[in-house]
Length: 190
Image (cartoon, rainbow, N blue to C red; front, side, top):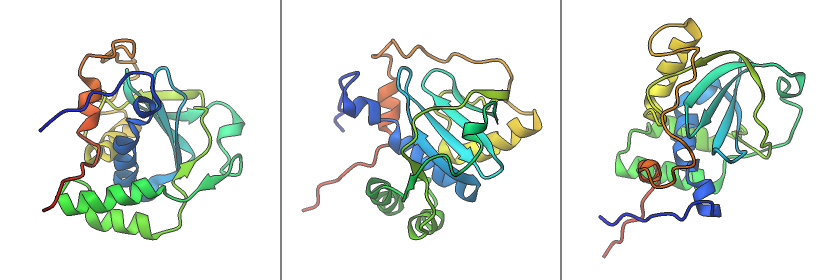
């Protein structure tokens, strides 16, 4: 298998975490109210949960959970949302065919519903009561819901201390190759 190296700081590089993030959102299922990627430097994403709390991921410390400190992020009416991206639907179908850890039933349910799961918002809220989920910078998507439950309970690998698994300035440390494992691959058919 050939490995494609993505040039840092290009649009493709900025969007590279998207497949991993969509798989986490799918694993969280009905707990997700909305999610968005950005800002960059380091690359990050924000997931607003239905209970009003947030999960924020970044490429240095992984996932953290907390409550927004500002009122602007606590209302679901603060920005417009868009339905699931076509790329996410294609990924869902490809994952189900390839037998990836993404559950086909949950993926089909998410794709069939008109529930918004991607947003145009790019600002991450400041959080209070932060708990880092642990499990590394890229825990398997199917393990994130259990890690979230542990963080809410203050047990397991969760911690209030910020881990630093890597620096986003080290662009050739293998992290982008790990992200590539979550990207759906197109296989040639004869």
